[in-house]
Image: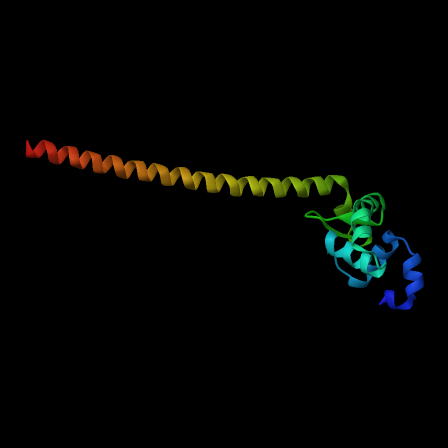
Amino acid sequence: MALEKYSEEQLLKMSMIELANIVLADEKKEMKFADLFNEVAKLKNFTDAQRQDLLARFYTDLNVDGRFMTLGSNVWGLKRWYPVEQTTEKSLAESRKRDLEEADEDFYDEELDGEVEEEVEDDIYDDIDQLEYDEDKENE
């Protein structure tokens, strides 16, 4: 692990963003923002107050630094792990668009199921009403 080659004093002197780079490189996989921040905060020995004060700054630094990329759902990775085609704005926008379309399809499927169930229910009640009406007519 790359973190092991640094002394505690060296880790404390490093910036949060440098530590994030090392942590992700050591993990060799993407991480949720909260997990990444907690790992960096632990290495820097931040107090709870410092964590709260520096959370937004860390998020901004991740967004601005060109070595990191968000993969959606607040998951972050190192840009060097992904082919250039995956990191372009166009491909990221297409991916987000696909996700939104899939979510819309799921929503409409659920909505249509509910409408169909209501229609079937209405038909059943109409049939029962018609049967009762027919029986009344026969009894007259």
